Length: 428
Image (cartoon, rainbow, N blue to C red):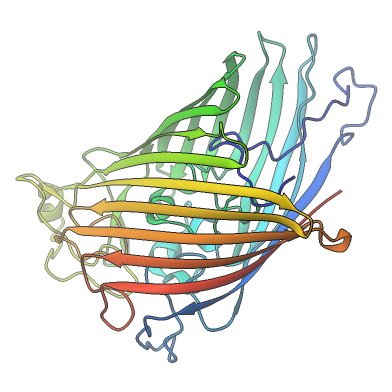
């Protein structure tokens, strides 16, 4: 695998296709099993002089950041171990496989298994669980047409273009687009190639409300990846129905109007040797809380606790609704790589623009106020051409974040950060 080179947005070519013919039952089930993983550690410096808090008395916290929120010290961003087996292709038998990814580090705190975990919504990022299963599912391949694949279990989809696995992305940090995406889904997911270059995924998942564990909200996912030419990939998808609620008085109030909706669409162009261009657009809509529900339950809309809860107040967004929000964001990437005698050198420029017009989507936003976020990063990666370092990449990243509100550092509208990261991948 070429570390730091992303293949496609929704169908990462990370795992080798296993060809062991075990469908007839004559070979052991674990034949063709792969073991691999990623270790990523970094050091981040923030030039915006972050303000001090009780938890971070030295101001060593980056505002509105996920896996790199801690600065001025070494950080383990990711350490995952994955064991997997692809169901072999067979024209006559149903074949089976599985995938389990156990992760620890800072980035799992943003996308970890939060379903049914009330503390996920009430704790700050630094206080969330630092380990979890990013993937845990069994899979079957049916001899139907070009091959129907079924996954049953928990999956952390990388919807849109950005991925939370640092070995598969070009940059160290994640934009607000990635932070807004839904996390893990647990359910049944069908994968099918309608055409040679047209891949589809249809999923039905269930998410628990921590307030009412017996209530399960169905979540539907659909995505397409179309590769009409070797150098051009289109992708589109949506998630509808994921859990959506508001925290009040140590309770989770479920959405009683409509559910979460998230859509993404984008393309990757790689015609010129050594270059990749990506354009990604994403948009979402959160449902709201009906006013009659608020008043009938004597909810004080003017005094919600601000400690760790999001959002920290209700706002009226229509004549009948509190806290109905929307979100949109666009990301553009230019990635270049070239092999030299000393190693493989890459450069990535990423530009993102995110809009939170009602101040209800991002945790750093203020409810009722329009927010715009801009994020620009330049990442330089090097994989040395030394045998003992063939699976190691070093990255130096410069990041500039800008907002129309003073949310960074000690009341600044922007912050500049520098991050140095080492990524090691291994496989057996």
